[in-house]
Length: 293
Image (tube, rainbow, N blue to C red; front, side, top):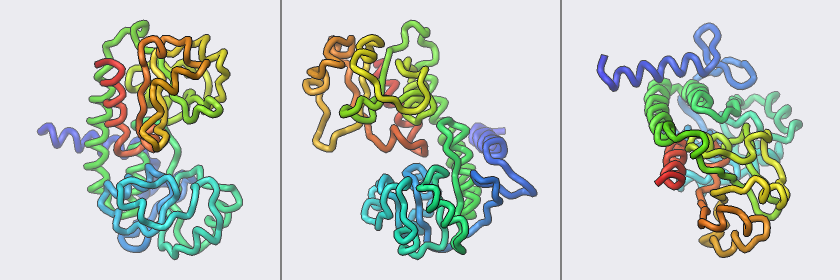
């Protein structure tokens, strides 16, 4: 078996393991069989969902999106129905989609319940911040689009990239791994713990997340930040070319940290740190290179 054939075989195995099936049908996040719909207008809800649809070659079918779905660049020009967790029935129905593919955490709950009882097919994709999770998303979306072959190819590529990115820091001893923290925002010091996309990216890049003992995001006090003393602070961009080291390390919560003494600041793209899709492996590799040049 050649190396490309082995990669495709691995991807097929991952697809079978990652996505639940029954009678040969892939199941979505609610355990419902996913029917193939090779044509029609798509409403995509979730930045990673949108990126996967585009990576499978069906981006031209997307007619509307949630507010966070801004990549590929042409998606930003499409109508937005707002944040995926604050949808309105009127907004969703106004785009006249033939298929809705959405992250399972769309909301509020009453809107999700409304959509489940509409004639428009709704495919819900599970929230899972892992390589297996990405493969499962691809399997479900590929089944919905009738692009299973493209799904296998995409999974093979992403699996290889993800493993290669993890391998950059695999041999670094635990006590030599850099203490890092990612903040979703500085106004409330909203920090990423475990069970978050950002937390998994920190782990896969070889960092020691100083808040890995917390699940989800937490509002960290300045005292706790100083106590855990990060060596690297990872932040979302502010849209104005920053934040800059001068601004960040002038904040008392950071001024006394090792990160301030060594200039340990990394600013990465926000969607790549809160979603989990085709570009996540590249983000892991980029962060690993910055942590361990």
